[in-house]
Length: 154
Image 1 (cartoon, one colour):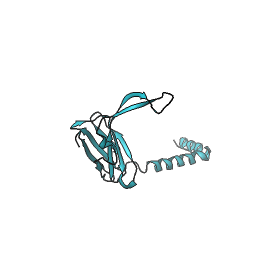
Image 2 (cartoon, one colour; image 1 turned 45 degrees about the vertical axis):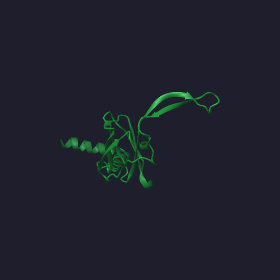
Image 3 (tube, one colour; image 1 turned 90 degrees about the horizontal axis):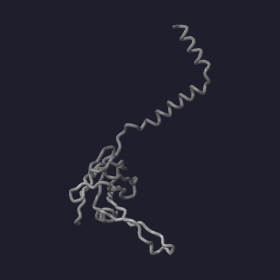
Image 4 (cartoon, helix red, strand yellow; image 1 turned 180 degrees about the horizontal axis):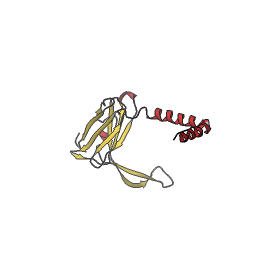
């Protein structure tokens, strides 16, 4: 057993120095990259409904009020649920759902080009920063739940 230990130490002494330096650098890099992992994130979760029914495939966009923070967004699942990491600042919420309606001739294109027709399926007031009544104030490093209950009537 002693002979095996001596032989192993001999092999370590003969390895190039860069191998130990590389291992040290990789270990330090791994520690730096994982230092922030596991810390709680500021997240907004919720459900989008229209007149009480879940809205699947809706776009939920969150914009900081006052310009501080980053915009964020998500798409709802089949049950109308969404989850999005956000900046911990007051946010204005936009919700829209669009459907591709085909192409029509572009009246401004002399070559006969086409433009896409896109129909908004939800009331326009929810998709405009100036008219949306939807806001949220997420709590830093926590999940903040909101229900976005949209209505067809103003």
